[in-house]
Structures are given as C-alpha cells and as structure tokens.
Image (cartoon, rainbow, N blue to C red):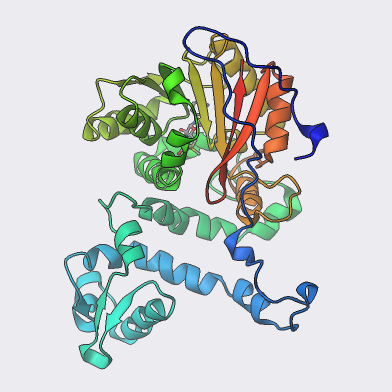
Length: 385
Ligand SMILES: C[S@@+](CC[C@H](N)C(=O)[O-])C[C@H]1O[C@@H](n2cnc3c(N)ncnc32)[C@H](O)[C@@H]1O
C-alpha cells in the first residue's frame, strides 16, 4: 500500500472499556496466490516457453469437476469407516462399472484419494486432507462450500462470457431484477446449502481472526450478515467474556438457532432479524462484516460502513474481512476471481483491496484504520471510531 493511500493514523486516545487502540498497522495484502505458482519457470523469469500452464488452467475444469462430483456422490464420507475396493464403492455410492475405476484412479492421481494395492483388489481410502476437509462432521469440513460450488457456481460460470459482455449476473437472477439474496433465501434447501457453504469457507480464517484482533479490549460483537453463526461460535468459545449478536435476514434465524444450539452457545449469542439495507445495525463494541461488502456496489458498501459508524460507540471497531485483492492487483488471483464471482452472482458487487477499504472507512468517519492478513487469500481491515 502506498503512503498516499494510507489513512491518517492519529495517535490512539485513552478510553475506558472498550479500548480504542487499533491492532498494529500492517498491510493485509495476502501472499501470491498459490495457483499463480511464482516459483514456476516462465519466460519472464528466464524459463522455457511451454504450453503446460496454459493447458493446466484451460483444462482445469476436468479435475475441478471430478472433485465436485466426488463430494456430490458422498465418496469421502463413504470412506470414513475404512478403505474399500472399487466394487464396494460402486455399490455404496452408485457408480456405473464403466466409470468407477477411471474416476477413482483419477482422484488418486490428483492426490485426492489414496489407494493401497493395484487392480480389482486395490483398496481406496481418504488422504489426510480429504479426511479432514471433506468428511462431514470433521472440524475442518468445507464440503458444504464445494457442494454449493457444484450445485450452483459450476453451471453459472459456464456463462461467464455472457457476464463479461453484459455486466449482468448469471445466476438465478439472470433474467430478473431481484435483489441477490431474495431468490436464494426463498428456498429453504438452497438457503441451507448456501449457509453451510459460507460456514465452510469462513471456518479456516477464524483462528487468525481470534488471534489478530485485541478481543480482550471489547465486550460485545455483532456479526452483520452472520449466516449460521460460525464466527460468533468461535469467538464466544475462545473469549468467554464476549457476548454476540447475529444480524441477518429473517429466514436465516432458524439455521442460526440450530447451529448455535448445537455449538452450545445459545446463552451467549442471540439472533436479531433485520435487513441491513433498510434497518439500523445493532449496537455493539465491535461490528463485523465478513464476506458482506463484496456483494454490493460502491455506494452500498459506503452506506453499510456509515451505518456501522452510527451503531458503534466511540472507540468501537468495525472489522471487514474478505478475500482482499492485493493493492497492485497482480498476485492474488483468488481475490480477483472472487470478484468475477461477484459479477456472476450479484448485480453490482466486486472485491477490493485493503487500500480501497481503508479509504472508504476514512470517508465514512473512522478515525484510524489498519489491515492484516488472516489466512490464505483472506485478510481483514479494521476501522476505529
Ligand atoms: C456471503 S454471506 C457471508 C456470511 C458470513 N458473514 C461469512 O463470512 O461466512 C452473506 C450474508 O449476508 C446476509 N445478507 C444478505 N443480504 C442481507 C441484508 N439485506 N440484510 C441482512 N443480511 C443480509 C446473507 O443472508 C448471508 O448470510
């Protein structure tokens, strides 16, 4: 981030609880996207000119869809009780004999399945990664996100070219002018799939969010657009002094209550139904916008930050976390592709850099801002009122 882009940083004032001191000043620009593989030989780095990378990316939908179908078919939970042969898996998850061994062995070759032995007697098993991230009930489970990617995004991205030409979303609201979330939230099955997907996406950044913000200085947190409540679940468990509010559209109330009851935190958090485009935000010492601002156009982003400013006490903090684009818009391919995903999914949404967000926070009245990387492509920007 250049000095000219940095928000003014007045010296922190001393207040009572909650304390206003911002976290240390850092640039949240995440590291280069692993998919970009900066260590790979390339003509620019003096390496040989080959078609390998072009083919790998151009045909990336092959391995992507093999994995998404494995999740859809329930392959990984089918292996959670122990290894199985191809014949056993065929019966268990319903594979045609013609497809089974090529499908399973392709996943072995991709490192997405283990196999002990060869031929008909070979026994397939989860790898450490698939056991941890793709078996429901495992603490790291992110299959919900991949299930949503399979059921929705995979098809919608097939129309990316239309989106690039027209600037129009390519999902359920392609031919209508309905707000982005109305269509999804009207169908309870799709709503639940979406909320579980968000929980899966967000889970991996929660430990860093707990560690990299001074939660001991604040007593209450409101998660704006909370989804099921995984963020609050993590925070109130790790910081027993915190109480939390989940604020989201009314249909999310049921899934929120179920999730927080299962996490045994119902006595520490409560759900407030509301529409952040129309209603005031609930007051709290800290307001969190997690994967929220990127859904909206610039004016709405600013409106939401201004509402957060209104709802916070003096010294309170707003936290924005997203797949932040690097400030030079060169390296975080995941953040930039996420922004194209917002083109596909929303009428006006886009992802942004930490520098953009800090500028918006300053424009909406926050007196100091800072930015910190979290996990993978995710980073947070903090504004102090
Ligand atoms: C992309 S999800 C993010 C969920 C969660 N914060 C996370 O990081 O995983 C967006 C959330 O915003 C909620 N939302 C969308 N429009 C809203 C509105 N107008 N008012 C309140 N919540 C809204 C959705 O229901 C959804 O839970």
